[in-house]
Length: 318
Image (cartoon, rainbow, N blue to C red; front, side, top):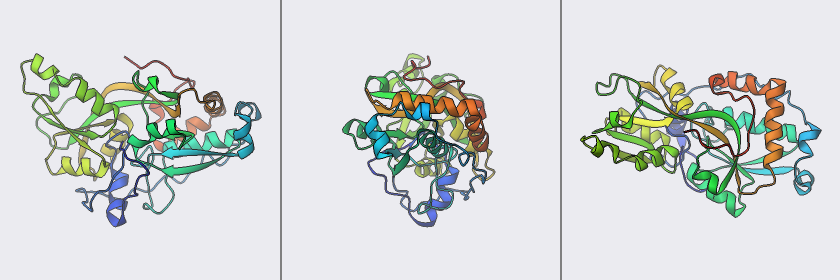
């Protein structure tokens, strides 16, 4: 979960090592400065391709505006940072892979269009939608009441907020269900994310409880967040449920997942009033109906986050 304009791709061997390991913030970008995280390993992508068999569905494609159907292309701002959402399994100069990549590609095939994917940092995608730079954005964007004021969403999965610590952590061993459990600790998270917003909005809970406040450190690169955890500069990471689960399952990650904190619907993001939302909703629902959706989620280990039907602008989970 990161943030910038067109994201400079991570460079060299450090990028190959770091990106597959990090499930640190529901979106992100930035340069690592060449600092490798402890225990980082490259992680190959699954080889099955459930998107290959997807075909155009005329009824869904007919919902696209006529000019889009004629042009045959859509521009997508894509935040590529960590598995299972979107990452570079073969290095930053190769094609990205992940759940978000497969779902966007499958939707495009249902609608009969090609995608022009631009690698962008998380925090810059939503503002760029309003300027017309992208037709839609991907990056594990959670649907929140604040974002709904300026952004339209078409949901495709249910993810949310969770916490992780370095294995062997002696201060936090159980599931985090209340932010007062974090009082006195230093929390690392991604810039421009729902995590940063939640931690900032709730920063007074510790004082009300008569405890020392927690400190929040914000990073614009997932790799930097994990490195900070490994080196003891932060005590806990707040990031996506699916990302942190994936990371903790990697034997070299040296992290432990502390459970779900707050669930959020996640969706493709569009400028407010976009004429594309009904077509995208229809496409996602076609993928759910024909089983492609379930196969994509199974491929990336996120089946527990499946939705039964896609919705446009659902209210935020409370």
